[in-house]
Image 1 (cartoon, helix red, strand yellow):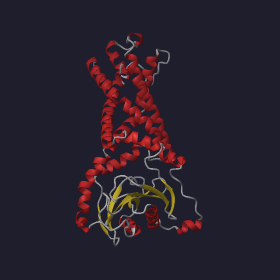
Image 2: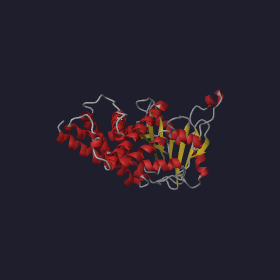
Image 3: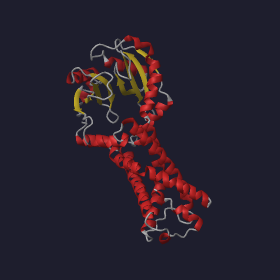
Image 4: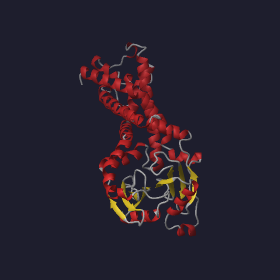
Length: 392
């Protein structure tokens, strides 16, 4: 690579990094606790593990008591509407019932956790309350809704450009240095430059994956909106004239779930949309089933079920762009391989914070010092590449 190319790539790396570094640092810092969301929620008492049952009690609990959970939730919020029923990712015995003030309300009025084996409520999840809620909103949309999500998505695209340009510059920088060299006895700026570049290469794959999946996640609203306007609308079109169901009760969600599970073998509940909300029909459930194998557990199959008689009316595969979103969401937070992968995600996140922080430090130092005191053994045409670390 000639000096002109190095200078161009250095310029790209410098300005893309300067634009996105503060926001990337914010996302990395808020992402640390979000890796352990489930564990922190349990520690704070926001979620409660179901109690141990005797062998006889386990044998008796042959199926989840969906109808009992729904009835209990409606008694706790009279006049409110059940919107969704979902099964916990980590514990198949835990179910969540979400209610809204109206059937199609955007925001929930309550979320209750239940033990599916007994139908008993375990806890009420705090809505928009507590430190984890603040951290989550900062990480997802900066408390700005869809515009905030799209803004962070744009920062993610710029961060990808920064990563690519940094990789391009790493080759010329390391031309006369052994891989992984950290010149601890040189000036502080040289030391941090070596650390910045070494950790940048070490975290390269992870940082790229997390950034790309993060960009995809910021498009979740438009992606699901597109799916609702096309595929879901087509599925529900023959039933739109049925009119909304009367009252807040619907008929036999237990029966609807069992019909859907029978229709799609080797599956389990992901979540279930109740009649009247934006993911279901006026008198129809839409049951989103996930596979019960590691390869299919993040993918969903929507099944349309009549609320009156439990008949399966339709079932369609999700389009590829929705499946890509569903796969990227858990991958972004390391929610695939249990605790070992979460620990790895947490460690790589910490290292990425060092990369971003050291890059910002190098840029600030460069503004106050000349290049002469930290001149390296590289040739004149290669020294421009040394500025890779100073650009962030």
